[in-house]
Length: 452
Image 1 (cartoon, rainbow, N blue to C red):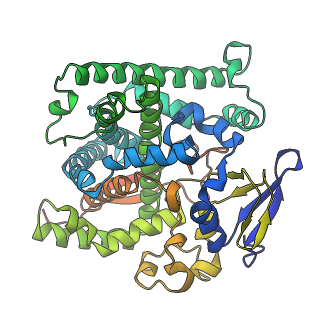
Image 2 (image 1 turned 180 degrees about the horizontal axis):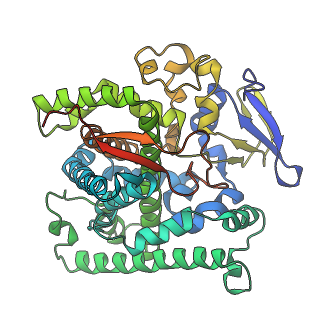
């Protein structure tokens, strides 16, 4: 993109010299993700990269099946239902802040941001998706251990992941191949086993008309994903989902629902550690809101302009999702360019987010204030690429944004951050996420300019 910023499509060659195209223009991005969305499907390579981890579910549904699943699940992601989780999000944010405060007393505030945020977002998604408390902030669970294993691949694991996108080798788990592959396979098997047990228990509870685990969570709303799916689809007389279907959907939402938000928070904290002036601006805005309402409402949070700017700029500069390649299932024309069946197109959010033709010559500069004066291509809704666009955009966008904002609000009012890792951060590669390789160390201290 930097070499050819004016070219809407950049051709490259995939495995075996197959044709592939990097999307470098908003018009092409919109055509592929929206106008002609269902002319493309997930590639085999992408399926092999992450399907073991996140299950089949909505992410890998195609065509009319995707439309049906999206319509059904959309009932859970309405604004009213997401708003009902605000107290849960705020409560978990406070618990995280208390854990960080203990860390300051214990070891001077040296924190692995990636691990801390994985704990809290997994606890949040446990309530939203499963209707149960996982309590990773109290004591790391089997869930956390398994996800750390499958997402944090060592060098050998990364090589195997790359090979697996071309030739499926994960099934070699029990042959004399590297231990990392056995751990990967075991962790995924454990996640499926545990989620299958939870799903069966919920089916039994709903079938028997019993109150499920939601009632045991103080202040918990009435609708969690698993119960919703059991009631709406497993119990349905028309085209019901099987238990296996439910497990795959739960895998989708538990994995992607916590990991992407945790990643966004990790990069946000790294940014705050490098831009103390940004921390202070966020703190001032948050404290002003808290003066008016000690328990901010959904609308209070939505109206926080600088927090919204910071959130969007964090997701623009360090988008948690690397990109999901698409393969044409028929000949088509995209932005005037004939595309042959079988051609792979790569919509990578960062390619759009760093393009100077969209964001200006300072596209690579972190600047939350830019969102107050968007113009030209940057003002196009397609330009904010973090959640995708069109029928396949992230269904959990509202949940992720509210969770992210409530945590940032709680932390910036109490702490200052110092990034301990400078310069370029090494990331897990290949990976579906922009995930730091190894810990992301930050030094946290109590904010001295906050009046109790």
